[in-house]
Length: 294
Image (tube, rainbow, N blue to C red; front, side, top):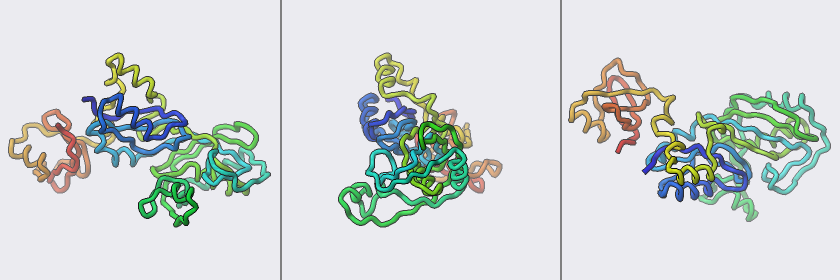
């Protein structure tokens, strides 16, 4: 069975779960999941894990994300995007300079209010379900980091295109909403494209239709990135000539001596050239923390 990470180009109109369902059929396995949700109306990079690669969710989700978003000024909606009800209006004309100045205030560490129409849970129920039923929602705030912002273009009357590089968990529609307030008016996100998630970029993404065609041509493996390649930015440690006792101890969760000159921290572990998973080394001791071998 093919296992690894697939860089999928999600179209607008499909949920991230819809894409997972399609890939379960394509790869003939139930063991498929995505690493980082995209709203149904958004498009772009969706990293999907197949087989044992589903164990890598935490390592793939915790990566920088890059987005291109259009901000429509003059109205605010309850969902902060184009799918919601209008809750405020403003006749404030917003220029390129206004947007650029506002973007400067969103660099670095930011405290962001979670939108009520989101998939976060409150007492086991998703917030958007509570919002639709009119139930009271407790305010939630999270810490995010915005690494880069860039003004791209004026796309129409009171509409501007921006690029944002940020940490996981950032709600770009909330950033757009907050920029509207920062310029003294209101705004909503009218378009969103995720152009990168970690090392996975949109120019290398495959549509579901392309994946189906690759399967018909018996070339589906061309769209699958191996587990260790997906973690290529992590240091590696190659172990050769381990005794049977050392190998057994390591692959059963016990530690072994790896020498004081071994790098400390988390790294990819190879035994006799075979990728076995992730391990941590400290004080000359090595221990596996995630098993990915056969």
